[in-house]
Length: 257
Length: 282
Image 1 (cartoon, one colour):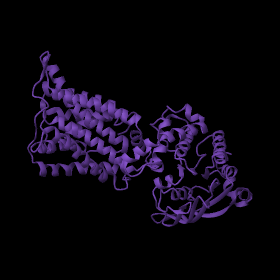
Image 2 (image 1 turned 90 degrees about the vertical axis):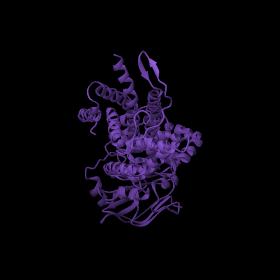
Image 3 (image 1 turned 120 degrees about the vertical axis):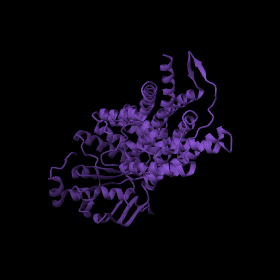
Image 4 (image 1 turned 180 degrees about the vertical axis):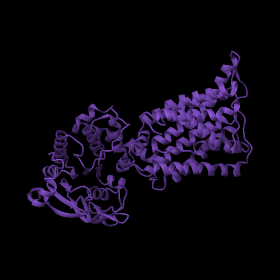
């Protein structure tokens, strides 16, 4: 069964149509990319999948269950975590607190007292998961006491990924992995995601402006253009297609990988 | 010299109330990014509710119920200020709290009347320390302010709930993405701050009678204390409250009693002007 499925999803902001009947699917353990130029609606697709925006029409399903219009909290609980564009770390809190909040958020419901009790009861599991994240991203262990706002861009991306992993997702949706990062850092993060996928079985949905990064990391890709899926297929095939090449690879947009 | 020390002692006691309100403002600001201009109302509500309830029951019980009642009202204020989805912009929320402060004054006048109210202090005896009279009420206020400062600092730094509060103001977007509910966060912050400010009002009323219209003065003094720490530092809000209280009492004692609110305003504007040249623009 597909892990995440978008079925003819349309997103509107007022009159403007950002996403126009986009259908997309990610299978368990799969690596899928969503590429396209600025303003093609990539982030809106991701936000519709994660419950940040409510689709005007169409359905969003996680393992067959309809979650259209459900809040992000529900989506997180069902196993999909988002690493937002620009990282959005909790800058005044230490790195470790950022990570722990990822676990707290997963058990958070409307009411704060029972949410906190639920978190405290699961504290042993949270510790185990924290150690796993530290093993996966050893740099974070070194930085655990440092306020997240006082780490480098690449380190903040690790914090954001680690925070998402604390919710034990089966799919990690990453918005603009490479944005503003040095090529060598992007290379490291990309290798890490590949390992995470192969060893831990976490599916990846990657949104990035860099088509070369997306093709090298992901097995399959969707090319978005003005809110519609213009092309889709195995990365290997798409990479060879002339349109993609001229539209995204030759444009000088961060050819990082 | 005895007069000087007497004024300092009184200043620390009134300053403790400023500190308590200032720390409450910091708590709300650090969790929601909102400056709650209705914060002082909670002190008034605490005092007036305690007075009314104490007509029918023992004073300590009245004080506890008044604090809980105020915390409940504060949660309602939170829901109005941040909206049902918890996503009202900070500027809009701020203006809503100004509106609530004005509205609350009318409601307080209608429900409690215009007479300033006071009631029995913890003890009517006073310690004589080298000619300076220290009332137990003063000591209680100072102790509560200090305990609140330590408690809040530990709460925000060390507990997962406190960290969730800070995280929600750091990045509301990410807080939502990881599953936190911004409305619940705002409610818990407003409720805690409301209870804390109410305790300040409950302890203040025996020494300074509280009237329906006292809210604005309390808010301005608390805000001046909070601005001392850039609206984000609990510790500096505590020190700011003490400092402001002492300065005000010295002016009241040596210059003119009418000047005390003006001092708060001058101190606040000077601090804003000074700080806004640095990293923080209020």
